Length: 400
Ligand SMILES: Nc1nc2c(c(=O)[nH]1)N[C@H]1C(S)=C(S)[C@@H](COP(=O)(O)O)O[C@H]1N2
Ligand SMILES: [Mo]
Image (tube, rainbow, N blue to C red; front, side):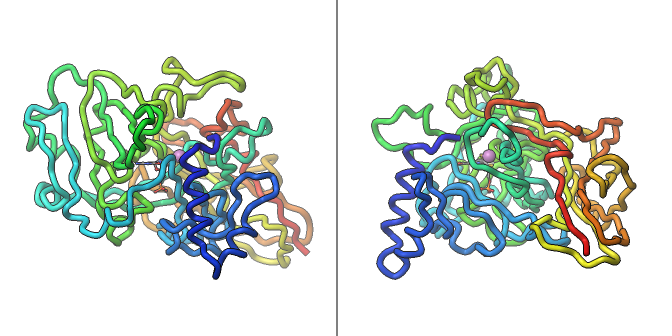
């Protein structure tokens, strides 16, 4: 995504806010090219562990490949963050139970507080939260947007109220509705066309069956950085559909007219503009990658090594994973380890190997229950979306 006016504004305010004490650090973060490449975390994500993250901009921070560990759930302190617009003020999470969400397109539309939602039902889901552009850095045409490598994804556990419970209480979805549309609670600056800024996304209305309105993430009250006080979670769908600080959830006959839906997040050939006739970034495709070794250029000692990584999909469930040590010429069956947290979570895999001195190229490919296999090559597209190429995600390692 191009750096928007709001991103520039946020980066500026953040620099100013750095004050005298940290001004040097803040300024050192600016690249001569003029693009924001700050190395320090923005205020909304200041609690995160910078050592485990790559800071692309004030609105785009990813997990380093070597920071995923092997604990299955991704630590919030190292979880990626992506904002398309300035988040609401920090005061939004001061009294989370007072946050309100309007439910529309149901028989009895109503505005409910988080406090009320908590009395209506409970559910949780483990799922991979992944930005549409994760893996964009591997495209050759310099697709615009954050140059995410593998880390604009994490395995997350969400707790809240199932949307279907809320809908049932309000009399069900009205006839003729085909989409479920969520609206983010960002403030739209006066004088700017709402459709240009609003983070509003529509998905097929039947997703209400698995969707959750969540107020907890990985056992913690949901922080503002990840959409607190209340976030819409649509398991199996790319990050953008999971609306943070949701202020309205509506069943609608048409998709929203917001730019982020009409022209944004549309898969098209390189050089083409986005439009509603092109596929929208909804369900995630089949993907896996090795997280250890991370291929940071370090030389490993000869001997035993546990090659491990993660596999996930928004489609037919992951059934098995293969690992290659020679860039995809030969493949070895990996074992799953850790809990199976359901079809929307990622599954960890490991392949134990004893390495002799030499050069290795490790990569993995996932195979789904329906027989589909993670592809060797990415599909070229203008914005660098949906990269699940096992070739692109390989890591080079020297063993001595
Ligand atoms: N309200 C709102 N929701 C949003 C966004 C946003 O800017 N505003 N960004 C979306 C995008 S593009 C992604 S990838 C995910 C990122 O979630 P995270 O910041 O919790 O990692 O949130 C999505 N939901
Ligand atoms: Mo995203």
